[in-house]
Each structure stands twice: as C-alpha cells, then as structure tokens.
Image (cartoon, rainbow, N blue to C red; front, side, top):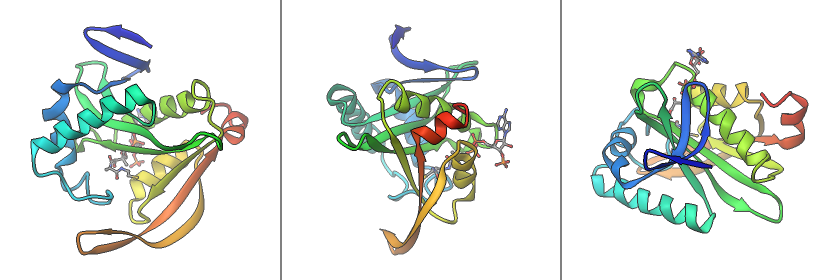
Length: 189
Ligand SMILES: CC(C)(COP(=O)(O)OP(=O)(O)OC[C@H]1O[C@@H](n2cnc3c(N)ncnc32)[C@H](O)[C@@H]1OP(=O)(O)O)[C@@H](O)C(=O)NCCC(=O)NCCS
C-alpha cells in the first residue's frame, strides 16, 4: 500500500488504480449511484441525495479501519476520474471467504475497466487477504455483470428465487463463486 497525492493507493494496474475513497469523492460517487441504469439490478434504489454518498464514504472509512469490509474507488489512470467502486464484504474469517460487489459509472461501461479492476481485487483477496473463496450475488437479467464474472473464472453455483425485494420489484439471484485453487489453476487470470 502506498500513499501519493493525499490518496491511499491499494493496487495500480495498467489503466486503473484501486484506492481508498475519501470525502472529496462524494459528488463522483453520487453521480455513479444515482444513475438509474447503474442501479437497475442493485439491491437498493438509486440514490436521491448527496447525503447518501457522504454516509457511504463514512462507512467505507470505518471499513478500512476495522477491516470488516473494503470498498475501493476505481480511478482511471489517464485523468484521475473516479469511475466506480469495487468491494469485498460479508467476510467469514474462519471459512476465509467474502462477497464481492462492483459498480461502474455509466460513461465507463464497455471498455474493460471493471474486468481490470476485478482482476486486481481478486488477486488481493486470494494473496494479501489469504482468502479461499469469493462469492457474487447477481440478478439473472444482469448479463453484463455475468459476463464480467465469467471472464474472471467465476462459476454459477446456485439459483435463489425471489431473494431480493427492492421497492415493489421481486428479483432472483444467481450465486457465483470462485475458489482460490481454480483461480491458481487458471493462471491467475
Ligand atoms: C457490471 C458492469 C460493471 C459491467 O461493465 P462492463 O464495462 O461491461 O465490464 P467490463 O469491464 O468487464 O468490460 C467488458 C466489456 O468491455 C469491452 N472492452 C472494450 N475494450 C476492452 C478492453 N481493452 N479490455 C477488455 N474489455 C474491453 C468488452 O468487449 C466487453 O464488452 P461486451 O461484454 O459487450 O463484450 C457494469 O455494467 C455496471 O457497473 N453495472 C451496474 C452495476 C452492477 O450491476 N453491478 C453488478 C451488481 S452484482
């Protein structure tokens, strides 16, 4: 972990940097999580107030301190834009597993940025954090998210009907999983 320009960098990749979120990110975070297309298959409705961004940033800071969860910003190297976030949460330490979550601002879709960010996140989880298993819970209609996971080697493990109720919409889940031994076998994608 290094610190530069007042921001705490976790991992640098070719085009993206994973870094801690900070108070100045509130407007960019709000732009991402208030967008209806980004939130279409999310487990909660689009944000409607910048206060929600500020609360999320406070939770992220708590997570870094307590190590109970990590939500990192995905910054574009070429211009420093905060494009999205990716997270490790719901840790079960004895079983060495957690869930991953991710969202990219609408203007940044379709360019492989999330794939690059998640390759770094998965490597961090299996090496630095020494986890054995990662899980992702996605809406079966969220085909771009499924493709992103499958490119990383995640496999479908189960169908959970009517797992979520967001507003008046009931939705199902495909549970995806990735074991460290399969990730290693595949040459650390
Ligand atoms: C899920 C989500 C992150 C996927 O975004 P994405 O940009 O499609 O994801 P990737 O980074 O994997 O990019 C892959 C796409 O970029 C394209 N691409 C373009 N240049 C590329 C490059 N240099 N490298 C890799 N892929 C590239 C790929 O062809 C692919 O497009 P395709 O799926 O149409 O074939 C995005 O749709 C999102 O944030 N959705 C809202 C939040 C959400 O649903 N999160 C998941 C909840 S579980």
